[in-house]
Image (cartoon, rainbow, N blue to C red):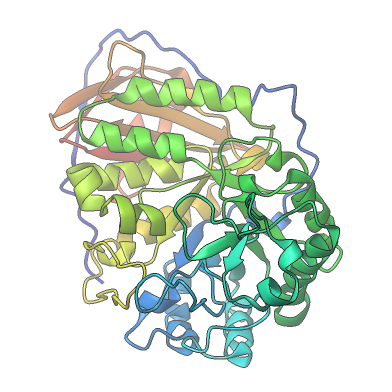
Length: 458
């Protein structure tokens, strides 16, 4: 492995007394209108998540080929493996030569290009033996045109005024289900139960979850939990009610867009604090939010990390892991993925580079071991160390059961200095990325290079 790059921050810590107005901002959710009732599965309390693109993960593009990477991912500290859809892809009205993973032709089958169900079961079993968990990407809102359900049960689908199937948006390779049909609901639920009961998967990432009735997901959660406790991730940010009874976690799209804008100089650190004021007023207490610098949609459609974030990418990855929430790694990020993976064609990830392996290994280890970084109510509140007058610095600390962590990030392309003045964070700490011991006292100033960052742990 290559040694983690530490040129982004200056190790020099200069002691000087500078008055600083310290303001505090707790990240405890204060929305009293929505109470979270579903219990988050215990193993998720300090977990991270890794999105797996089977098609592009190897030259073979198979489940067996991906399985060979499991020991490497375990060594990197990965906990939850989110597998993009592994189901057969529709051929009718297919986009490109291979089609979209999200045009599902059969809900209880494996895409023959990836292997078979025994390959899948073997992979899940090995992941479990290594202490990892597997969730499947589930497409409940629509199916491929040539899904057998469309032929045998056309009444399960939406139709326009002249009786034609309906495609959501411009997704012309799929047709939308009609959730007013109770038999269709039961069939979809039975398919969800199949993979938990037969393949021992640990939950689901649910595509466009907000486009499916909330009561379906609530019913599904109860049914799945009766088989085994599951973890549920909603691709949604607009419906907080999904997190009340059905889902453990949803997407932090809004913060992701703020991070993109910060990297381009359009927003600053104060916009992140404004985001958390909004976040704390919207979501049920104990909810998990998923934060990311990339995922399959961002990479394929909106640009690589380098295109969107440039030199700010590492700093924003550190942000996504140390704020309250769960950090996501997309396939290839640890290898510095620097191309937009084609969505409907074969486009293998290049694994020759391990440039960010050490970064993510360190972040995953911190997440696992420091209770201040744990998810939901298991972690510590976020207390602000920087005030509004310094819009270039995002600085905070978190504490839980004696564990402390302090993050200081330069959100600009110019060198910055930041004065730490808080009795709450004084004491002996360790620099998470250099293992250097640092004695932090009042009125200590740290120098940060452009997009530099420091993370101190007690």
